[in-house]
Length: 95
Image (cartoon, rainbow, N blue to C red; front, side, top):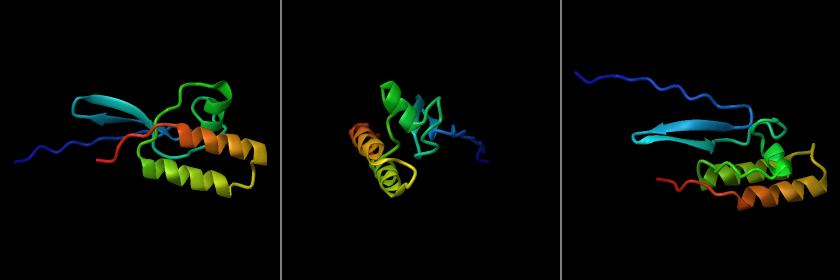
């Protein structure tokens, strides 16, 4: 009889989660989340010049870029800097 296991992933407000794998765990940004979250929001990360949290995939990163382009609550300068930051952030290769 197969053994069943459950896994729960908590996503922080800034869109960051730790995904478990067979040989360990990796912290990654799985969605854009709340930009202004002081702990791990993309905007806070950029302003503090922290090492960027890698995106889960190129698709997730591209979705975030499209979402930032469509946001009305960012001034043009902040939007341009944020788009540049996101585009330069690494991502994990899709399997």
